[in-house]
Length: 282
Ligand code: G4P
Image 1 (cartoon, rainbow, N blue to C red):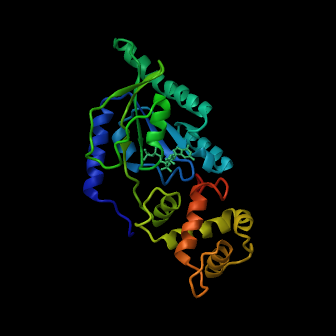
Image 2 (image 1 turned 30 degrees about the vertical axis):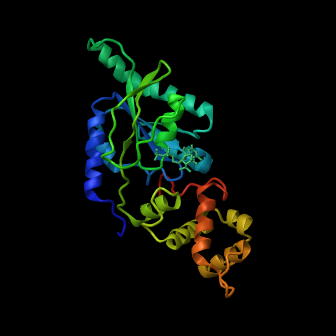
């Protein structure tokens, strides 16, 4: 598999998350609703040590609602509390607060039974880069909290944000990297824009996306690019999209790199409609 993060980086990120975990009662794990499996972090489970967890499927506005429901049922079957969120929707933000309280309640009750003085539960947000951690923290804080960036090692003093009277949230999220055990995970994350485009070739990512769309959402391709549903030849598909969008070389040929860019931007910004790249059972 060609994609690999720097092992040193990953180990450091993991250590930092482990340190921060000591400070909190529960975690809010963000995954991308368009690829809830691939955007999970397999390391998290190992370091969580039975701490309660709320799973938040972010960017639900860009995901296929039917698939999102399947994913929510899947998490529930695993005994996890999970909700789907579009950060622009205030009702969804309220739901995060409500669900976070539910997740924290058992733990806090246990502490009180042990004689600990009642206090607000403490949480941290954890997720892979670009999943929406800063955006959600800002929404929960109702103000802009400085972004520390995705580089482990960039540490600032931790602060607690009061989320209404309900719980306290660490102002800096925990960043864990995705792990690619399979190549397809890399392509799914690249298609939704989580992995920088330099890691995999833009054209390969676009081909992956177009193949997936042809198989699963063919009507969207017909609608947006006037493609023939039966067209199987990828070169012809690129050609049709390129001609439609006028991305031509001086000699009249289609600029494939530009076509790839157009397709991926359309997909990532929801212009091909809400799309989910994986099923709970796939
Ligand atoms: P991170 O801290 O986990 O790295 O992610 P960050 O909050 O920076 O969010 C990454 C991108 O995802 C941002 O877009 C953000 O607006 C977008 N995003 C977060 N939550 C949602 C959501 O529920 N729905 C949609 N559609 N997008 C969401 P960006 O283009 O990088 O920045 P900007 O356009 O917000 O400036």
